[in-house]
Each structure stands twice: as structure tokens, then as C-alpha cells.
Length: 224
Image (cartoon, rainbow, N blue to C red; front, side, top):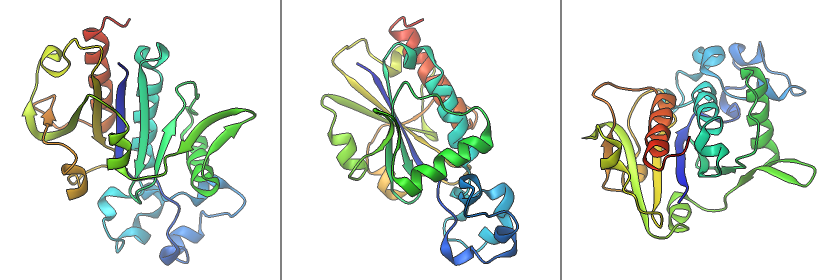
């Protein structure tokens, strides 16, 4: 029954080797400090101009806000949320629902850089963020009796949560949300489902979509 959220094409990556010598990178980067090793459009915009797919890259702030909304929800605290992060470089990670994501953005960047360098985040015997060894199709195929939704302003408008989630406790609802600033889903993402859904007549930020679809799910299943 848990809602499964996959944040896709998130702008989370280490600074690419081809731009590390750029002055905008050198000014801030330190091998000893994890946070400075993460690509960030706010700091590295001038170095990123010629990067392929640059409009989707270097936006860890979007992922941060999405995770804060999701992990802090009643749905997650009740044990009814699974959340996965898919990066622009096709790395996939699963988040332990009990993880406490840093509220401070700089510390969050450090956590994400450490995750990409080490491959996982663990404390003692607790695995807080772990990699998924496979692609998006393999991840989705893990779940049986599933309904897959792609959320986009270009999708069919749904204005009632009863039209989105049916009261079926055996159904696995998979919500795919773009973790990027602008542009559209890649062809690979679009191929995952024919259910292209919009939940507002207005373009919403990714964290606004996360918040709204979680709220819809909580209302549908009376999770307070």
C-alpha cells in the first residue's frame, strides 16, 4: 500500500572533470570539503554553459526541498512512503524513511557529495541511503500490481484525489516526478508509463507536486 515516489533526472552530481579547472569551480572547490564537490548552478553557472543538458543539472536545492517535504510528511512517518532518487547520470538510491535529512542546504550538499563518492550513507548498523543496482525499468518491475503516474503540466488534469488513487490496498501507486528546474522528461522516462498526469492548471515546482500528491494520498487513506 505505500506510495512510491521516484524523483527522476535530479540535478545531483559531482563536478564533471571537464569543467573542474574553470575559475568558477576553482574559487569554491576543496578536496577536503564534500559540499564544495557537488555541482551547483548558483555557484558554477558560468562553468556549466557548455555542458550537455545543462538546464537539468546543478540543482541540488530542488532535490533538497522535495526530500524535506516527503520525509517530513505524515505519510512517511506512518510507514506508508517509499522514496527513490534517480540522478541525471542514471544513478538510483533508496532512502530509509527514518533518515533525518539536514535542513541546512550546505550540509545537505555535503551529504549528497559523500553519497556519490562513497556509494551509500550508513551510520553504525543503519543503512540510511543505499544504491539500487539497476535502471528505472528494473526498479519499477520490482513492484507488483502497480499503477504508474508521470506528473507533468502537459498531462491530463486531475482535480480530485479520488480520481487519482482508488481505495485499493493491494495497489502499488508509483509517482514519477521530475527533479529538475525546466525542460521535459527524457524519452526513457516518458516510456515508463502512458499515464501522464497534471494536478494543477499552473506549472508547479517539483516540491509543490510532491507535497500535493502526498496530501492527496493521505486524504484518500485517512492518514493524519
